[in-house]
Image (cartoon, rainbow, N blue to C red; front, side):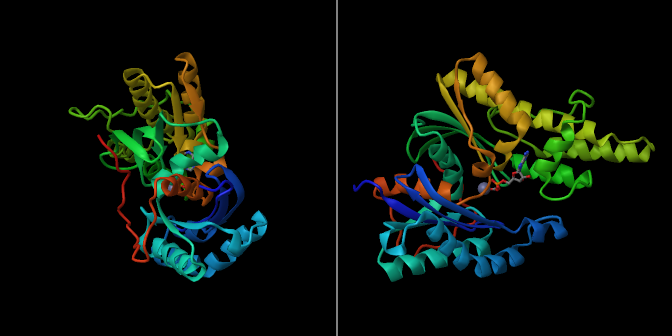
Length: 341
Ligand code: KG4
Ligand code: ZN
């Protein structure tokens, strides 16, 4: 394997059109993200059809910019990587079709990347000394996993959500509070002015699977609380609701992460995904890891959200394992994180 192996990576699974050039899985030479949030927030959430159309418009200029900013020409790229799932099917297909066309036209290998593995790999780009084995929490808009990374690309799932993802719960509660989309950052900000102990919301436990998460009961409890306040004509303190809800989510995630670390003797814990940029979650995990001598790794806020550098990093380790894709590659919208359980 040559050194300085440069991957052009493409990500279009949801509402960000992104392209990046990454060397040897760790060195980010460029990372261009074109976000559609301003368009979708008018509708209170991502509109799949609009997302696909915007990806089609944006993908070529975003790739050109990523190449320009990296200073690497397309001829000097060694492989093309793309997210093939999970995500919105129309959005994914734009990236997949573009990556296949580029790989075919330039005669470069094609690498198919699972978006969730991408989020985990974001940590490799910013923590050069992070190597498996380690524990990881993937908390995003569509997924919530607690897992062990036993080796590069090898996962052992310890827990997953039974219903809503953590970010989905943030978005739904924010909508009920009239805060707009995306809800996570808005709740994070408002919660700073509220009292996290003001309202006791439930922390769900799944009887036969204590490491699994459930956030839909918590979301319903918040909605019921808001309804009953309204019916009784009580004034709602939105900051207290935001702070109490956020605390319930952070407690559920932190408790399970610490149990996994203690039970499995894990000494390194990383977080990943959009919700990993939540300030209370970051602070709480850092404190709890500190108390137990666990090294804690978190990506910068920009590397927690959807981007293509994380896809380029995951792709490198797939390539090292000989995993390349054919031109029959298709989008898999319902793809999960696979591994032993
Ligand atoms: O990873 P991501 O960009 O997309 C998916 O792969 O799903 O995650 C987006 C999710 C949204 O639900 C958003 O509300 C949430 O991450 N999020 C946050 C914060 N920033 C983004 N949730 C809580 N606190 C935040 N600061
Ligand atoms: Zn994501």
